[in-house]
Length: 256
Image (cartoon, rainbow, N blue to C red; front, side):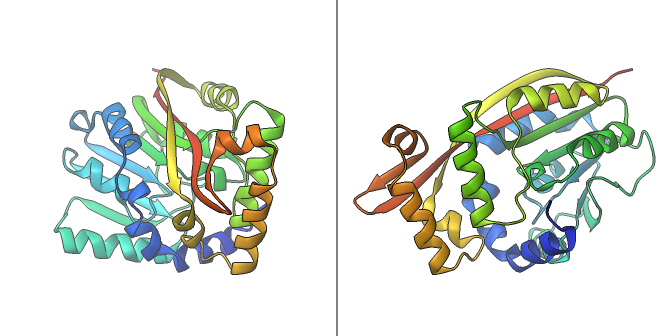
């Protein structure tokens, strides 16, 4: 189980890297999430684990107010700086825990959370909070890394994630996400599985991984079974160039 204070410190330190990361600031997966959210329909929006605010800014163009919450003060400071630079006035950023959202019941028309829950220790608690702060009929849009169903591949990816970033808790499978969301009183009505590629060196550098750990990860990949290696990575000689993973994007509505 990861410590929240350690996670907050780790991501605060890397706020600039995440603000500049093309895979977070842009990407077809962000386009899909925004389309699922249909932000023109909403008044109040909440973005959980907002980081430097990429999703919040995307929603702000057609929303009355977007609130981004995060436990990493460095991320919040970076998001506020971006809001000032971009002259976005209908987004606010404040401290908030995904499992203890600092707002009352039935507050928001839309809640989003993008590429963050694999760091949460309590997914059911997070989803209960989402259901609590959504108004009846409100919408939840989620994107996160999806664990493969194959045990060997799942175990390898988990080792890779934790070795790169000890704040990684666990990625859920598609079926685990669907069950957990439905159990929280939300009805799933749309779903996309998105194959995302990451520049491998950038993926490691974003968490300031030491050379020793880079070498360990690289060697483990190069000596992995060929079928697993070809499914998850692009390799050129003795170098790993790309990481491939799958993102699950879901839209669910709170039951009336």
